[in-house]
Length: 167
Image (cartoon, rainbow, N blue to C red; front, side, top):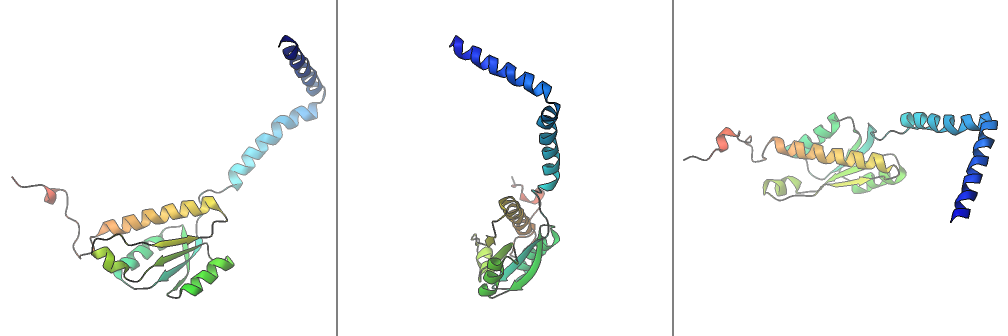
C-alpha cells in the first residue's frame, strides 16, 4: 500500500508543477467553470410563463368558467384555442402548436355538485419536463383555489364563527 501512495503522490506533484508552468491551463481550470455557472444560471429558466394552451370543454358552466378565468389570469397559461372537438386539440398538441391541452369532461359540474371528485385531464407536451411539471403544479393550485371559493350549491362557505357547535 505504501508503494501505491508514493506513486500517487509523485504523479500529483508532477501535475502541480506542470500546471504552475502553464498559466493558461491554470486560468482555464477556474475561469471556464465559473463562466458556465454564471451563463447557465441566466439561460436555464425553470419557471416559464405564457405557455400556449388549448382547452377542451365539453360543457359550459359557471364552475368551469371560474376555473378557466383563474388559469387565464395566471401568467403560466396563454389560451390559444377553446374547443369542444377532441381531434382539434389533439392535432394542436401533436403538431407542437400548444404545450398543454386541458380537458373538462361532460358532466363535470354535476359530479362536483354531487360531492364526487371529477377528473380534469391535463395533457402536456413533455419535451421540457421542468416547464411541464411547474405548469401542471400551478394548474392544480389554481383549480383547488377556484373550487374552494364557493361551495357549488350556491351559498358561500360559512365563517369559522358560524361553525362553532352550540352548547
